[in-house]
Image: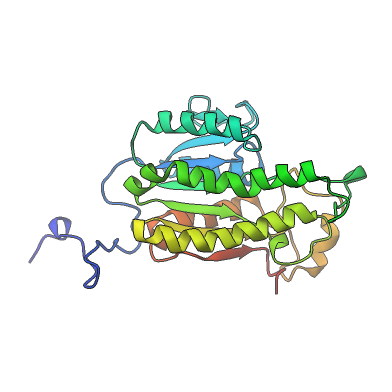
Length: 271
């Protein structure tokens, strides 16, 4: 009987490419690497902690410097302060990321950073009362940064046969009482970009998916969010840990044949 440990990996009879083993998260024994934007709180914080618990190296990026509120191992050494809304600063940050990766493999890129500007007293900004500077800033962070990072880290992603996860929003597919127009349209554009990237990057061995969170219990919840709970079939807010678990699934080998998808994480609010 053949030794299963020495059996060559299965290959697709059409393309001849290796087929990952179901339920495994890589067989080489190498430490996997994640680049995560928007890591300083909420969903990003939970995601960084979860991946580190699974043994990944996590390179975190945010506008803020690393603080003791982010108590994971190697945090200060693997954190890069990047203003994703500033194209020049974004280029500097990308160069620093590539320097930290040192030509090695990147196994996952999670584009979690996003901004949702509010009006006076936290009010929703509509199409006509959102200044053009705000429109541009929102799209720089929420839409352009994900594609700039994916393009800039393409060589490393190819080496790692990596996974990209874009964080969209329930507001990208329906009018939301708190999310402004610029935020909503940027997330809708990011969902479309996810499909385009999945189609083009699949031939390189890179999977691209999106998650669309609904009402998640984070520090940036708008006043009045609790009133929306009655319209959620599960009658509660989601947690950052629940979102992080879905992100991990999309980056792990257990989702090796999943690409071009947008997973709703909203307790059924979208139905």
